[in-house]
Image (tube, rainbow, N blue to C red; front, side):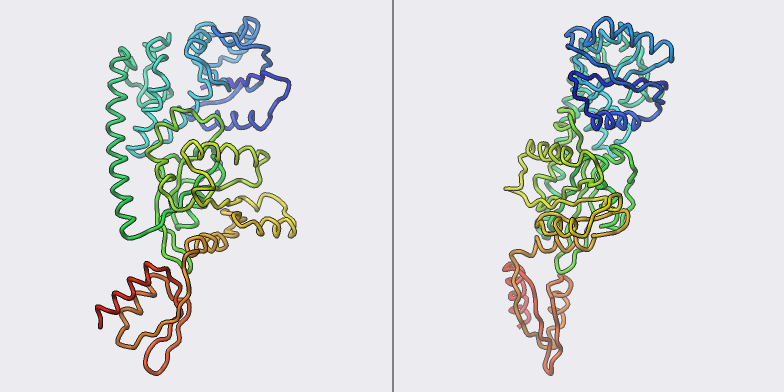
Amino acid sequence: MHTCVVRPVLSKKVNDLDFNEFTKLSEALPGIRIILDFSINIKKIYPGTFLGSGKITYLKKSIFDKKVKLLLIDFVLSAVQQRNLEQELNIKILDRTGLILEIFSSRALSREGVLQVELAHLNYNKSRLVRSWTHLERQRGGMGFLGGPGETQIESDKRALNLRISQIKYQLSKVVKTRGIHRSSRIKIPLNTVVLVGYTNSGKSSLFNILTNSFVLSKDMLFATLDPKMKILELPLSNDVILSDTVGFISDLPTQLIEAFKATLEELIHSDCILHVRDISSNDFVRQSLIVYEILEELGITKLNKPIIEVWNKTDLINLSNQDRIQIKDKNDVVLISAKKNYGIEDLKNKISALFNYSKFQERIFLPFEKIKIRSWLFERKLVLKEQIIDDGFLLIVLWDELYKNKYLKKIEVND
């Protein structure tokens, strides 16, 4: 589908980084071919049409000449502005929020992910579904308008739409309940949870794959993966933990998506540690980090109430001097890695282990040979730092906390 990308500029200061991001977002939408990509300077926003008559005439000519079928605008349009622009230009329009929602629609794989995206779509389109001039012509399957043949009318009225929203919320509430049950089970084991967060395309999925020996889709593409994944991460000198991957963040992430994905993002709230994956090769390195922390703060998460380790990824794409590396490594909460080159992965594992070992202490214990099962129990839980075999048994140096020490003492009592 021939597509035109338009980026309105409201001031003389042009942020090329933002512009590049919207172009990448547009390229992530399946089934399109970008043939026009430009910015337009606007002095003011018109409440009815967003653009003035001169800009509309200019766009109309460009769209007609290039036979464009879809217009993408890097701005959040009101329902009225979008409807009036579509009528003026005689073309389908997606604003920034609509584009992100369409991308999410094409990436959702699990039943939960599909429900979450559909909920976000319906909340966003409450005023657009009924009044859109094309709403009787949009024949499609699924939530994205780019799909194949399907229903000929999205919704007959708002009452039916609100009914569907209620149904989805009810189904998602059962997902939240199920997650709570699973979380309770993990607490009883117990297993700590580590969650990956970061700006989209920062390399979270690649890091998840290398840490857990998995094969989650990882591509140089915005929102390459959407559905969260969880798997066991083995750590040195520490119990195994559950590693969870989350959807990538982005600037101006639609409020509808944050609300819809709260069931998934709940894992962040209940996690024991967060790995903030950052693309050190990005020219927008600092701004992306601020956006991630802003979204975390919306969820009630800060460095004051949750341990956060910054994982600076893609070091293979830049030239860092030895002095720079030393200065960065001296920061307590930063680890340099390259998921692609398998650099710094062991440093990261050691950093996570150290975090969970902060309340542990070393102790020397003796086990006679007949206590071989207890010795195995200690090794299975990675509590043994050093072992020496002597005449009448095992001399062990263990690293544990009060919880595991008490469990050990109970086992000794039972065996006695």
